[in-house]
Length: 475
Image 1: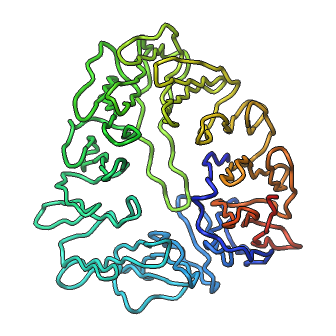
Image 2 (image 1 turned 45 degrees about the horizontal axis):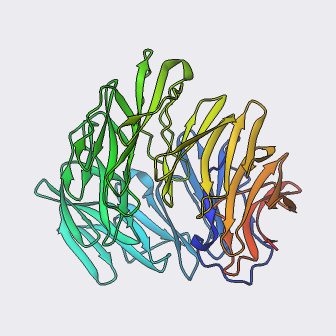
């Protein structure tokens, strides 16, 4: 498995400087053979619990040694106590859901339906079922009783949730209320004051884009919703069987061909990719939602022989024709970067604010591309028949079996953590540091001074596999 997320050091939970090597526990020796293992480290890297995914079900071994096999939700770590919080079904087939904090059932909240952590784990929001209806309590905020309270989560650091009352559904987020017909997901925010957009899905599977409560048409699927850098405009692409259409601020972008990807600048100019020729394409599907520790399954991509694609910039069709869509667009400053992929080859595209385009072919399938804030440096993972590699500023390293990149914004250095032959190493600007682990688990946590990386992972010791945190010097 390649981890293609990129950790920006300043965005990591504020880890203190006194990180030391420490044993945090051990894996359950009775876990099912072949079960996929996950380790969940606390934000202060002083505790960890493990979970095991097997046959579509994830079991947790908690810090008090207890095993929970019917887990509904991994909530996270309550801080500063560093106690794990999970929701699990009651034993004996009962409908009631329990909340366990540090492995012990919380007696204060009965029949918990949902929970979320706020303010970097400092506060807890809980939805409970009561005789008069569902109640949400989050500090001074009290909502209900309602027929139902769903979709508890965070948006731009603030609580969001959906209430259902008398069949009427409402989304509550960013101190505003919006009417719903379905379930909102794939949220996006931008601008000042913040604007919000989301994709909504109803019970029959149909989806639509919604901009601050103003809905677009229902369709078969939407892959994402994207604001311009300052939030002045928003774009999304709908799929209806084999037809793809782009929508800018809720209005269709009229084009003679299917539009498979679109972004819009703050001045309203549109950059999009359209299919100029199709060869019996497979019908793409929306990515599946993540299941606890499992990553979401991406929608199937088109193979090179199925499509011919061209970029259109501000209404001007570009000459170059691709065999696969350039769809993964990202703004970095005034420039827009895109990535197109097949199994054997990837294409990196840079579109300047003036509309100038540059292209670069890369052997292999490129993962998410990270560019430094000034746009001058980049790093990405790439998969070839030989294995998985890291490519930083044109230099390729590997192959590895697991990779995660990071960026130190104080020193402007790019690094990565990788596994090869059951050995972990940290590499910063070409300097490799071996780490006494056989595997590691994100997220990476870096001290406030950015001098030390706290890495939680596994180390075989005689007949057991232990969980350790290792303090890795970055300078």
